[in-house]
Image (cartoon, rainbow, N blue to C red; front, side):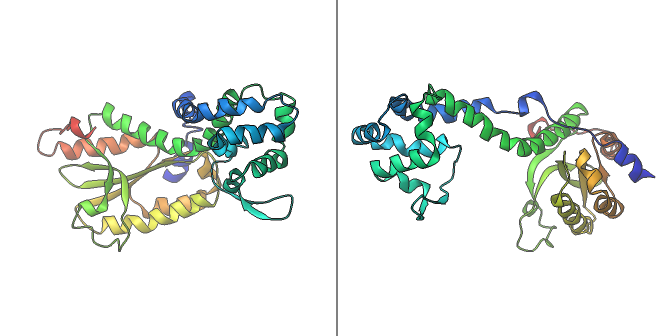
Length: 284
């Protein structure tokens, strides 16, 4: 069966070494707060942290605006303090007493006093690397887009990226939602609107994606000048293969990276209807 072959072709990964950590982003994030971190270095190794916090606060209270990152938190969470009060993390910056309360309650006091951290700039660099690893999932999607784009480029296929359906007056059955497609390819026969994704692991999201594209494809395909294409891959589909199989049976053009060459063949044939292949490098 075609679907069984599709499953057998699924790629184990689309990760690349450079995709694990965006070091340029990490360095930029650290550089933006390095002055304040260096000022907080004053607390390292001090016995009377409470008194030193008061001294530093009187000199430059703004340096404590970076407290959250010291516990690997970016957003302004609400927490329950040791007194049972619900307080936002940003409120701990409002006075030297609250700053010390934060340092004490989080455990940073002992870490600073005992010199378990020797330099807060280096320490936060490590935190930023860890936090950035949470963005790998998004980069995995971008890796898939880039892999597909490279296949198009290598085969001299003209395309556009990030195309909204509102660009086309004929696509009127999307309601108030604005659908952004990863790619658009126009041939002499039709306009292909393309979505791509890659899933290393399973989960409920895969069922939702398959269901969404099963609903989306007819809305595109009912217009004779357009056709929906789904390019997806990843071993995660093995845990959601029933829903994928349902979509596979209802969407005429579903490909993975191994079978994408078949779509390329279709595109080239349609571009040669008039005896030529179009290449618009401005769209690449």
